[in-house]
Amino acid sequence: MKKILLVMFILFQVASFAQDEQKINIMELNYPEELSVITRSDWGWLPLENSKEEAKITKITIHHGGVEVSADKDPIESIRNLQKWSRVEKKWIDIPYHFMIDLEGKIYEARPINLPGDTNTEYDPTGHALIEVMGNYEIQEFSENQMKSLVALSVFLAKEFNVPVSDIKTHKDYSATTVCPGKNIYKYFEDGTFIKMIEAKVED
Ligand SMILES: [Zn+2]
Image (cartoon, rainbow, N blue to C red; front, top):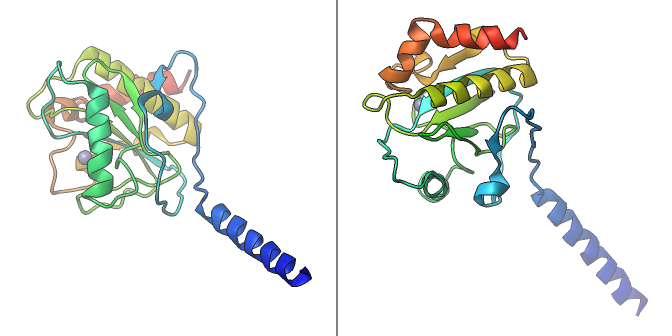
């Protein structure tokens, strides 16, 4: 009887150890009142099945989706589809970006910020906070509301992780094989408009 109890005790220890191993650390952010963000639990994010090595954020990098999006398409459905595609087809742990911004400028949380993103191109996104503007900005126009959200989110992340303004860039700045985030967004980086808007708010 004593032996059986001992075996049961050991099995229990092993089982609880295995469960601890599976626990994935997810960093949750606290947003200021003026920054409205739709959280993972708000849109029905599926819990992670796999993890990867955590990394500290040292840069902020802007992307577009690269696929044209029409106003009548439900953005949450698109985000859920991207999550499925990323996990099933690409075998990534999750959506490759940490945040997504829709056509109206609404901000959604995606991959937890402590877990590095993924890319189809040759740069290493480890340490980059990745923000994706949904749509194709080689074709689509970038709206004022989207700009406001992109600036506000970048400012929040820059303050939260002490990212210097000089390390807020776009995908194209790290990769020669992409036009991402598209010319209609990139022009605001080229002429300095975007960085000026950020600098004004970071210094507040
Ligand atoms: Zn990109």
